[in-house]
Image (cartoon, rainbow, N blue to C red; front, side, top):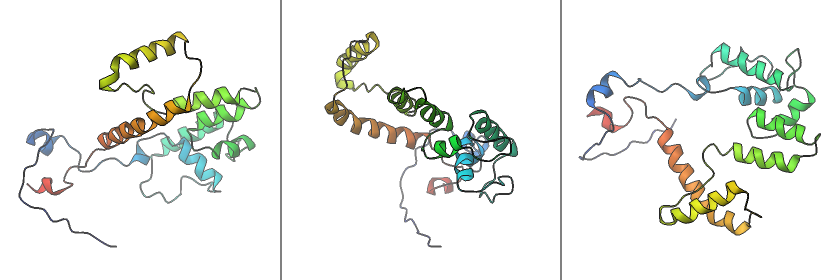
Length: 194
């Protein structure tokens, strides 16, 4: 394993919490994501790879058994698993989508009802995670008017030029949100030694 030494020099450290909170309230390390999130996508992916015994699977940080059971129940309810816990035909199709199983089920079933275009649009909107409306500070009035027109149904078509203009702003904001949502565990970094 290759370790890299970080050279630090004298400077200032600004924290967003008090020294008391740092010493008493912060956890020693963050809880691994696999232990605090919905595991339905993970279980579906593992089942599609042929891994059937999830309880004895060698997770780096094993999730609670209850979380695995809830994921299996959800997948069974969606029709992705049969009574024995094996993938169904619909489950195999659902595993092909890099989406939450509920969204992938919606897309798989949409073919039967001949509404795939609409379901793809809905799935895209739901998978964004935050607001899809961009409101730049220098064009707030224009953005608010565009949003009111959207809600009133006055939008006739989406133009590719709009997507080209808005996509960089969306991904820039998404990067800021992602960085802000990551918690640094207590004791990490050079500032912890101070």
